[in-house]
Image 1: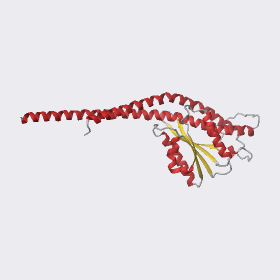
Image 2 (image 1 turned 30 degrees about the vertical axis):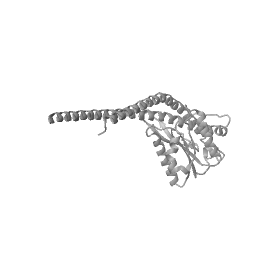
Image 3 (image 1 turned 45 degrees about the horizontal axis):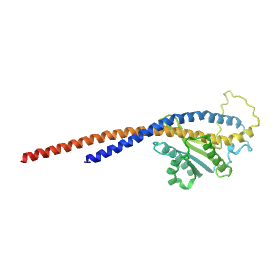
Length: 291
């Protein structure tokens, strides 16, 4: 049976941990609202850009002179998988769920005989993938120094991806991240970036007719590279909101668990103290009777 001193020390330690987890929960809750608003505000812009590109590219998918970012390289041999996770832990299974989807996608590509390259955005993704796929990781982008994600951060990643594509280093690029749904729910998501996925337009739905100046080819040449950075920016914002939501939930659970541990240790300490008092009384009574 542990001594009273060891039980008191353990209770004091757990109380200190509970203070830390409670503080982290409050910080995550304070940051969550701003991150959630940023993620939700970015969605319409990204969706509208996709709609504009789909409208412009409707008749260009089979045009050999169309931009390579739209029609691809005519090959499907080398895939770039961008795994976007958080740089820090203590957020439950947030990072693990993203990496699990990335592993499934990578394994599928390898089974199909494809060559895979991995670009990690976030330190936790690299830490979980380097043991199994260390040879496939071409670069890691860490954003620990960034207090608030901005478009400039996504643009730098987008330029790196475009430089690799223009150099012929891959044929298809896919980003894997976690889409924010609610504080309790973050959904790991896989989204193709290059070639740009073109959503089918409903032929029965009324469609507006647009006249573009300059022509569609020039507009696409400008929009398609920008769209890569926009989609990466949206994924990073979704990740930030999901990370804070997951961290808030995880720290709340840790705080409650710490409270349960304190209650159990306090009960054990009281029982131990009572047993010691009872033992001492028995010894005193036994000694008195012996006299």
